[in-house]
Image (tube, rainbow, N blue to C red; front, side, top):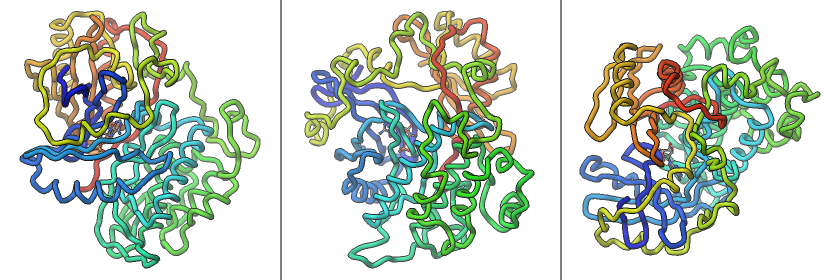
Length: 461
Ligand code: AMP
């Protein structure tokens, strides 16, 4: 593993953002972990200004449900942003397509989201790109709002300004944002409403909340009770959603209204959510281990390593701390990075759980061969390179481009195949993943830790 600066080692890639990869960085002595956004200024010359703005907004925020901003490092052609590391991955990985998640869990995340937004708006900051992919989870399963790339200050010294930049991710964007001038708060609240629909139903209600979209017209005209996703929801959460997804921003629920709504005030718990007496649950939808096994979604699967669960409590994890790292300043100083010092990254890799991956019984070459063959049989266009990355190109059901990567790597003497979305809808990506996994079933190690899947979409350019 390469040493980034003295004492800090580069771990694996956590994800891909608009301007480049996000990597894990670990302090060798203390085991502290930090997420590092890497921005290649040669590839993205326009990024510098945007990153400066992102940092300016993000650095002033401090809230338990918002990813902490630690600092920045500038080099000639690279810019680095250091952030609190969210080891639980993205919220969208917990959403099962067409199903959602248990009610108590959806309510917990929604409350944490509302709490973060209340804090943001209290400080005059609009996020403007709220969606499950930008909601990360820490090692205790607490929601953390991330990605302040679109954020802006809309209220300063008590004076609010109207916004006009059309930004966000289309299915989550409020109708007034598509039209022009808009108030910041109702627009963010709208996106929270769409997120709640995704959490409760595993679906997005429409591609875009515009007057031409048939699903949106039906919703506005209240002709939706027999339509999905609405028919899956019970009346109380649906009542809340109706008041949030209200076309006119002035009539839309405000945060205080949401917090006083009957569904929000119910204290759903893990044990009683399935039998919730107040009609708050998703109708006749349960998901349990059996459903998940049926869907073939067991992840991550560590052969014979079930005790090495990825979701270890912080205090059971010797040498790893998720409080603010102590030796951070070393990261911010702009010296040249040290390269190519070898150390083991296996322990670090275990800190992340991700559902789109599996271990196989075959060796490296055989895995590549089988995977490429299987992908070609499924009519995917794929391109392999010689470092074990297969890039797969296809189109989804809506004929939108879908690009993802299968990364084959050796870990603890086992071969891991890790799938990662590069472009397109996450829901479609995960449907592809399930089909690929089914076809390789005979060589996949079976495990018992299971995570459901969700909806992932791309930000408007
Ligand atoms: P972004 O550039 O913020 O869109 O991040 C791209 C992806 O990297 C996200 O969707 C996450 O999967 C991952 N990621 C970003 N920030 C963090 C973090 N602080 N901790 C863990 N993973 C992260």
